[in-house]
Length: 329
Ligand SMILES: Cc1cc2nc3c(=O)[nH]c(=O)nc-3n(C[C@H](O)[C@H](O)[C@H](O)COP(=O)(O)O)c2cc1C
Image 1 (cartoon, rainbow, N blue to C red):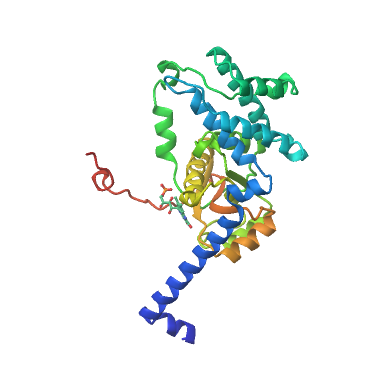
Image 2: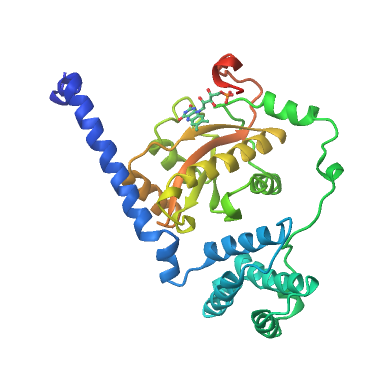
């Protein structure tokens, strides 16, 4: 037995070292958070997430039961951010930029409809004269929906998809079809995100060398068919997080998107298994560097995936009694 193994067998020492590692990894996470969170991104004039959040705030203002003039501070800031975006091509092509112009347009319409004749509204109106109708036409704002529009007629297909999805780790060698994957990504995108900030990104990894890097780095991939597995790496962008209270928001939002993705893949004959990203900050840095993922993003979870093989061995994964996890008070 090596000296390290002998030391690991000393309970108190092992627990002490583990606690030190936990604190250390949390500290590294905090460093990334402090470096990139939303206000730091504002300082760099990187406004994408701030704009998405403001668009959402204004939409919510439009949904109030008895609306009163609202959103002035945000509207003024949005105009400044739109102008700042115009310094860089990549921002001008972004959805956030176009959505921001479009929400200003809707905000002016809303004010006019309510007869709120306001100085700022006139300024925004003049500001918008610089933009063509194509820039003002994103599907933002509010709409009134009738109950029957939100009523799903029969839920058998939904239940069937949810109940038949199982974690599989054996995949056929059929290549993932790009159009099918895109359909699934669109369904994953239908998942909600906090303030509609859409901070979750999905990376499909099918190149064998890249897949091997993940297989060799991630801790939970034993039992996966190494030669046929594809991966979907889900990240969250720290730039989207506004303050300390949101430090876990990325994981929650990634979970929502990931579940939609897994169910969508399953509905199209593609099996998957979540793999927790339990790696150290330095392992994460290496993998992200190799896959070309920005250092502002954290890997939240990974899905191993591929078309179903003809026969697979799966764990039964029995669920607890409902009473053990559900309380109604
Ligand atoms: C967040 C998360 C992380 C997981 N990590 C791993 C993993 O590292 N390795 C693995 O083989 N399975 C992993 N799983 C798969 C679970 O063991 C499996 O989903 C669970 O037993 C329930 O079974 P089911 O998916 O067939 O319903 C993970 C699942 C989730 C939701």
